[in-house]
Image (cartoon, rainbow, N blue to C red; front, top):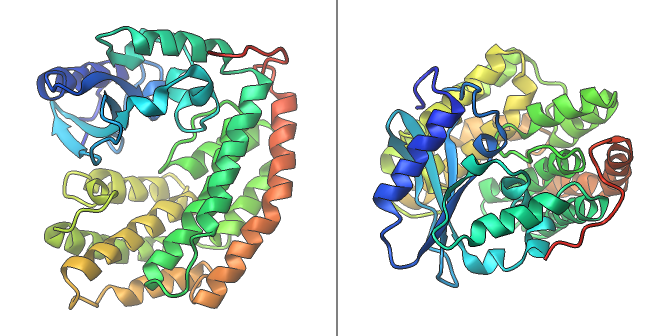
Length: 358
């Protein structure tokens, strides 16, 4: 858990010291930069205790090592992901990526925490120059939309039910990223619904926000019902964190170190009156816990009922329901695209002229 009262600039400095101590000496090390909320935040702002500091460590390997995960370090929770230089071959590639571009969008020197060759600084300069150009904003929106259609294509009734829920849930949640990208906002992961709520309120489109919650199936849920789901998810989380052995891409999110983010962060949203906004990460975390338990504690079935109740509350309680919900997301994409265009057209920060990037 991040120490309460820690400022973003101090959290960034702590992450840089972790990189210097534990990553920079490796022969494949090529640099490191901040991603996520700390890359977008005001350096003088206070980092919430339920947030971590996302760091991408760039390596020369064609295939990056597995994600290292969340590491408590100097009162800050640092989340380390490895990224191959092959993902950063040109500014054009980065400008067209809805997830990569945001880390390089501005000239804030604090977001580059290690750059031994200067390549990251040159990349940042090129990306920052074109980040707000309409051409690149549209391409990033299209990138997010492709992630929706590609994700929904993975829905397979032969897979375990928790995997089926994940295959619908994450693409449904990426609808928020299309709009956040159009608004030049951070396409954050856990807090995507609070973020898109703020965006759509600014543009007077709260009707669209209710539609996004409807696609997720949580528009009708009460704080009391969400609190029930947090309780059952927490039990599954503690069981999975205690028994996890099999490595998964998300394993770092289901550990005792990650509990303040996954569990306390959800409780914090409910306490702030954002109970519906908490549902996405509750469901995602719950499904991941069941995947871990299925692999490493297959006899522990006591958490299936709570997950079934959550899925039923989201009108996603069966494979047939999930296929229907996936079809609803697909059918919504033209509407989503039109709203994204409205935001792009209305956003004074979007440049009409084009800078190519290089």
